Length: 233
Image (cartoon, rainbow, N blue to C red; front, side, top):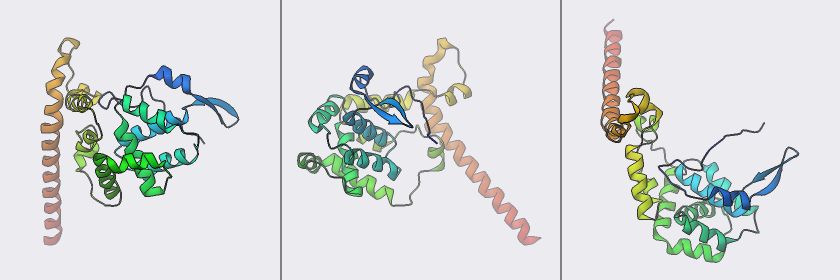
């Protein structure tokens, strides 16, 4: 059984990764899947995409790191020089170094010595590696309302971007871009669509947490009342 998950972009618009898809097709290579030849990413593109998608998922699962480690292990022909240059041009060098750093630290992936030196000399990458490694093995959970509404602003995602322009774009789009949830709850005609720039932050950072807090308070009070009735009965 093979799972297929269609996407029309590698990342959402709020977390930009401006890779040229025409170039991905030109560098694609053929591989066999159940006896059928299909195109897949070249080794360098595959590793970069895995590090970017792992970063946008905040490396919450170990299998994201396993994918990076296995790609490194199975691709001895990797052109690390071209890969680093491509990542830097796309503003994604920090995410690449973070991904391979996690693969090396957690799963023993073997990196070229110059890549290891770049990781050691890159303070943000070392800090992020330690932070994510620690989070993987702790039971601290995000508030329930954040898990239910995963578009909430994340300082961790912000710190993974190295270019100021990408940081600003992430903040702006995360705080103001509507989702189907916003449109469904507050339907507006097309002419008033710009008002979502105000509606989205009010909904996400004021109404949503207040409503969640009220529901939790009501649930606790109802639960306390039920327990009191049972004890007196």
